[in-house]
Image 1 (cartoon, one colour):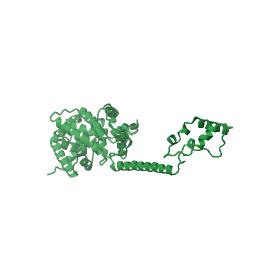
Image 2 (image 1 turned 180 degrees about the horizontal axis):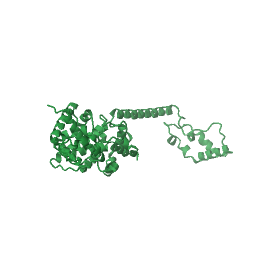
Image 3 (image 1 turned 45 degrees about the horizontal axis):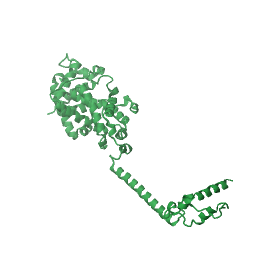
Image 4 (image 1 turned 90 degrees about the vertical axis):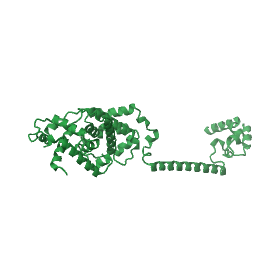
Length: 161
Length: 209
C-alpha cells in the first residue's frame, strides 16, 4: 500500500529544510588547507616514491610498464650490438679508433737532422697499435719516450713557424 | 596556489545534482604523483558535498568536520589504488559513506545533535513557509523547531535509510549515482527511499497534515 503522492511531496519539501543548514560562515575557507597541512605533517605525501612521481601511470596501467621495460631492453640490446660491432671493426681495421698521437707520422714528415734518436725510434715502430694490440702494452716506448715527445713538440713548433 | 583558480561560483554546492567534473581524471593523476596542489583542488571541488552528506547523517557539525577531514586524508592515502573505474566523485563519496556508517555504528545510542543555524533563505522558501503556515496543525511551530524535529526523525532511521534520503532528497543525487556509491542496484535504492520516506512521514505526521 503506498501513501498518496502528495504526502511524500510534503516530506520532500520538509527535507529541503536541511539544505538551509550550512556550516558556520567561512568554514570552507581553510578547510582544504587544514587537510593538506595534515597530509604534510603526517608525511603521507613523502610515501610516494621517485619512480611513482616520474611515471604515475605505471601502477594504473601494467601494459605501460611492460612497454617501458621493452623499450629499455631494446635500447640495451642495441647498445651491446653497437659496441660489439665496433670491436669487430677495430680488429679488421687497426688504425680505426686510434688516438691521433698513436698514429705513425706521415712519410713525408721532415725530421730535423738534429734528432737522430727520434728517427731511430720511429723506424723501430713496426707494430701499429690497435684494440687487439693496445698502445700502452704494444708500444710503451712511444707513450713514455721522452725523445719522441720532444720530437712532437719540435714538429708543432716548426708547423707554427 | 593553483587551487585558487577554482571559481567558487562554479563549484557545485550541496543539494545540486552531482556530476563528475571532466578535469577530475587529470587532477587525480597529478595527485597520484604527489602533486598536493592538484589534490587541494579536488578537495575544494567536493568539500561542501562531502561535508553536507556527513553532516546530514550525523546531525552534528563537529563530527561532520572530523569525518570530512578524515575522508579526504584517507582518500589521499588510498589514491594509489584508485584505478579510475568509477569517477573520483563516486569513489570519495564511498569513502565518506563508509567512514560515517562505521562511526555511527560505534556511536550507537549516543546521539548528540549539534545543528548548524538555518540560513537566511530558509525563511523565504515558499515550501517551508507553507509548512509553517496556518494550514499546518502545529501553527505555533517555528522553522528552528521544525529543523530539530526533522533531524530527530532522521536520526531514528537506520543508517542505510538515512543515507539514501540524504543523498536523494537532500543532496539531489540520481538513483544511479546512489547505487554506485552504495554498491547496490537502483531498484534497491528506490525501495529503500520509499521505506525511508514512509518512516519519516510517520515520525513527522504532526507537521505534515
